[in-house]
Image 1 (cartoon, rainbow, N blue to C red):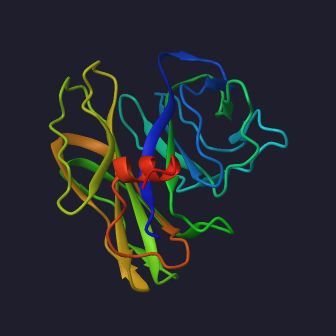
Image 2: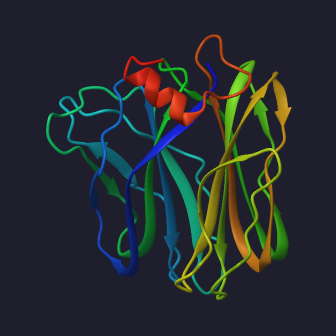
Length: 246
């Protein structure tokens, strides 16, 4: 099946700056066997690296989260950087609240979004990745990746350092939204989108248009489960399937 976005599980938008680690109590729990993608954004005028960054949860035993698509910090007033943690096969869901804990590089402004996907290879979803950046531009294209598997799902991320309160960040043609922030609090903006593709070799990234800004960019290719490819299952149908209705 093709990789499909299911739902947002939790968030931590620390716009005042705070310490690490960050514990996020998920508002909803994922379905066992699905995948978790934790999108992390850093905003700090002081240079930061991803050294020592990690993620875990309160499942017993805890699931494994691997740091992927690590961008360097893009110079600017906020100094943005992005990366993602991926759990290939979430298991051992607790009966009570599920908590995900993320350790970031020291005191920093951050945006952490926890998303659930389904349809990735549970034996190992990672396929390939590429990162990049752009300066003082109104068009940002995430880098192309070289896909190894014949069916993959591409996640494309743009993170923007801009003082505008609305950066007019578009949805790229042919891609599906996961989430967008238009900088309504005059602190940060960004968009995460995905697309199902087939065929090995070079796969193009997503092209975003926006107000002039510096941007951090990544494209992350995750392998679909056996039989993947084609159009994704609509979220409402997936939910019915999870309930045994469809």
